[in-house]
Amino acid sequence: MLECKEILLQATHNIRQELTRLSTKYRDTTSIGRTHGQHAIPITMGFKFANFLYEMTTAESFLERTTIVGKFSGAVGTFASLGTREVQTSIMKQLGLVPAPISTQV
Image 1 (cartoon, helix red, strand yellow):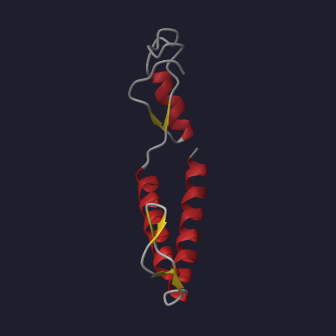
Image 2: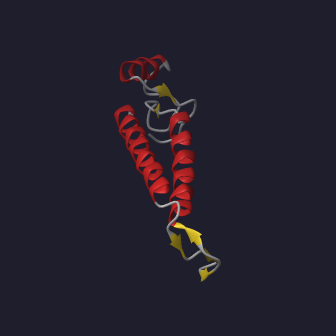
């Protein structure tokens, strides 16, 4: 899971770099603006790319703050079959994950 997060973060970084390049390159290229699915006043393609850049930056920020949790607490999440929470703690430590504070079915 942690590898997936790193791959996604690298991808969002690369996309942001490209959107930055495109928003600069097309800052003076006129395009039809749209509002509620209808034509509106003209904007630029650079402005459109800058909007995509903003959204990708926001998504990347959320992803950076995401904690990957793991669960290993038994069939109903009570640790009854394991006897103790320490089993989950040990497994999550080995995997480099944070144990889920509470869970139901795993």
